[in-house]
Image (cartoon, rainbow over all chains, first blue to last red; front, side, top):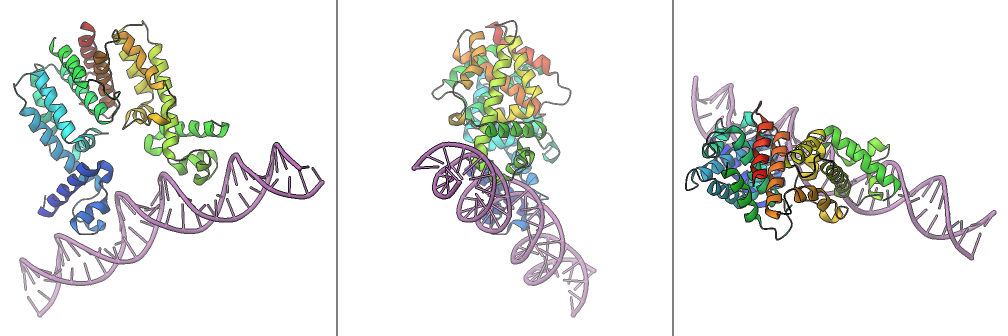
Length: 168
Length: 168
DNA sequence: TTGCCAGGCTAACGGCGTTAGCCTAAGGTG
DNA sequence: CACCTTAGGCTAACGCCGTTAGCCTGGCAA
């Protein structure tokens, strides 16, 4: 990826982080770089390709955050790290987790890397790993979308969920 | 709501069910009714209001499906009913669960009604209810978006999750 | 010196939600 | 019966979107 392409991806990330996924517009993106929208197509085939790069960056960051969770093997700590990343970068998290994943446009392996800390923590039980992942994603996305009642004690829900999984 | 408004909502629902949320376009919707797009604004203030009505219908249907789950009080049966509805009406489910809920445009009480079967099943433990809801939503949306590896045994993941919750 | 080409540009297309403003037919009222 | 209101259509248009076609220019390589 060229130097210019990297600048474009960085600018796209900033747009998304500041204004949500809808704020990423080819024209707005070009504006931020001081060029015109059609020039972007010299570097990326379409908007989806730019988004995919941002998603790749976000997934790598999430993987890093999960790998750093302490103590290793602690499901509650892992859940807390997951939630912390999502709340720190809500728009990025939404972009990354909304709709089908453009797997063919992503750096290979980044998906597995993000999954590994959890898979290891549940003792390589695939069904359990998927269940915990679904729980964590559900908690985070419902929180980000404001679908829990205002004032709901989400820490209690996290704990109830993760304790139930850890117990087994 | 007038007769015509009802027809509009029904047509909107069909568009979404057939082509996904993006297929709901004011022009496409008007086409299906044999009128022009601007005429729709005689019946609804904007597109979001039409969508909100469709969401209201979908939520009522989901509530009905959950209330009908047998035997009452069985968390696995409730989960199965939830998943069955989502897979039967994937586009509707996505519309209903994606992004913030336009609560002020929804029929009052429909949200609580959809939640009640689960709340009752977990013995009115709010934290547990939210955790199970997050798990179920996560499982469904990840399945609909094709984010699990192809060939993953999702029934096993459902069972692992719901058993963990039921145990407590 | 000449030619190539990366990387800008303008103009434009079709689709989107939405608004302004017009028209017509039905129905209630004097 | 004549009149006025209004519900519910219509066309034209605006500003946004992603995207394409085609042009131009500056720097680098042969």
